[in-house]
Image (cartoon, rainbow, N blue to C red; front, side, top):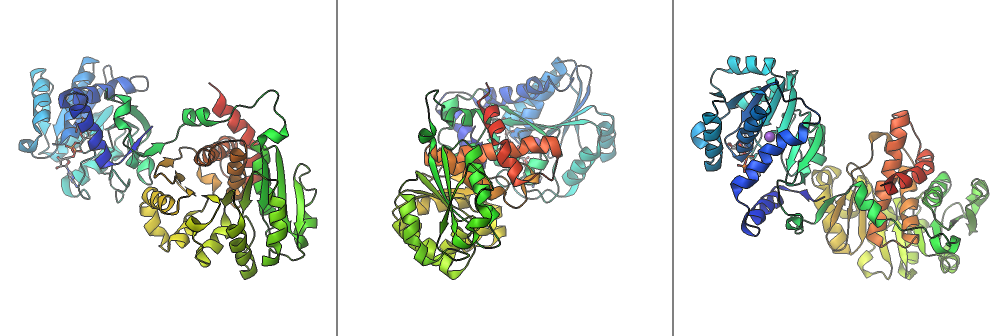
Length: 508
Ligand SMILES: NC(=O)C1=CN([C@@H]2O[C@H](COP(=O)(O)OP(=O)(O)OC[C@H]3O[C@@H](n4cnc5c(N)ncnc54)[C@H](O)[C@@H]3O)[C@@H](O)[C@H]2O)[C@@H](O)CC1
Ligand SMILES: [K+]
């Protein structure tokens, strides 16, 4: 599903009107009606005491329509117009006129106490104050009203966006309606999925408001759902053998970080790789060999981390692999950084770059664009900020657009881990992941992810799809564990859950 920002949302509406001939009032009618129809499985509107809070923009217009449909469902509805009535948009005025004819009580908020009494008595409060049109932080009477709504025991239903959230960032300075249900009009918007906005939306229900599905093709940001991944995953043939499902080469580990490569290798194994090879520095090879019998461990050189002199022996090995994962646990020794640089100058195929390989790329200013290989990078926000020489806070203010820019400029697939994880492609598309939970914030999670992505690429998925599907599958595995254990599961457990996650994705 498309993930819209404010401008894209407005463009979608205007395309529906100008290209497809839908009228603005048709859209508003569908929007308001869907507030009731989409929630009727969850909320009993019949005989409920409903307060509809309408702002003076078109979000308020949706509110007038919703008030009509709630009344038709048998609810006892009161409308409060919040703001200067003379500022009501033309189309909202038209819908207000209909509810007036229906004799639905309409009150202007002059006596705050009266309004608060209604809010306290309400079973359902419909928030149609502000949608995509928020221009600045909310203050004064509207702020007080929002706080009163939030302490009410009523079910809160926000139209389009919980009032107070900035559409493109999900920010609100702590002041926005805390909705139980949010009905997103047209498609899901960034405020619904970015932090902190996602904490205010409750259950999100999307209403297409009758807009034809192709109208949103201009939008290059996708909210990734199960069905998208199901369509991407490769089919496993009955007559397949291990040679059909990829040979993965993982270059990992250094003294003190011995386990990282094992985690990456387990990620690859559980994601279904045919063969998994782990290349580690000589001094640590013994401590790893045999830990997981399915993993073939090769000892490289004689040191406790990779040295430039290891490039040639590694290259010899790489000839028989479909894909290489480079970086987990390799450490930051200058020799190791130079090893990364030399290796990347000579690798022709596909490399998944993670952890300290990214450190080397940033430190030595390695230009990925000029290298012969093709790359997926999987930084967390700190590693990414270092790559682009920005502060973490700056990246977090707009992780979607920073990721898009980097992937396009460097012609790589970029997986920016965190909440939410976003995958950007060289063509400028961004896929925002919908799975995952805070229990994943523990060591080794990223190492496993690198293995999963490498594995899916080795199973013949395209570069970008392997990244998008790997991210989804890995976080879904963690969600399964969170259901069982809450917080406190390990990266190894996530790896072991990958098969169940894959099965769940493939279930119809
Ligand atoms: N064709 C369309 O444009 C459609 C619009 N729709 C609805 O219309 C909404 C967008 O409508 P608008 O563009 O009119 O904008 P909104 O109605 O979202 O917001 C504008 C209103 O919010 C007030 N406001 C803005 N910032 C404020 C602040 N900081 N403090 C206090 N008040 C503030 C303005 O005074 C104005 O009354 C969507 O979110 C959606 O609900 C839907 O009906 C679908 C069709
Ligand atoms: K709203």
